[in-house]
Image (tube, rainbow, N blue to C red; front, top):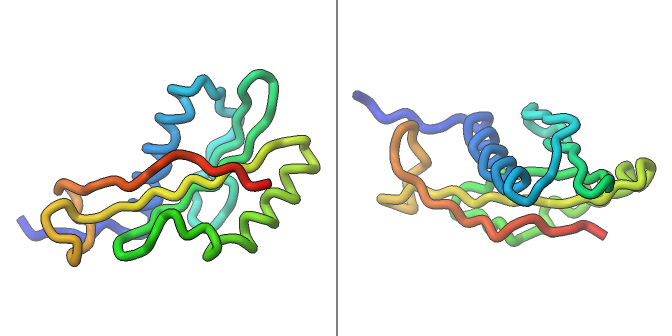
Length: 123
């Protein structure tokens, strides 16, 4: 069977699953979920009656998920929008890399490594 590289949408969905599980584990309740690429936020959720907007990005190696500056303009725009709803804004960047060879893409049904240190609040 030939290897098939994950599409940008599939990588995005994988990142959303990782972040979504973390949100559930932390007790967030989902109000809305949006998996459309380049349409933010991906999650609108609440915890202790406080609304949060979560922007999820999948970052393929050699990209650096901790490089928030690359998305700063989009994140500031989302933060300004969230403030209208008295909501907090979080950025969740999920680094993904082929487990066997960092120079190869992430393939369907093959091992991959995750570089995710949690959500960063955008203030």
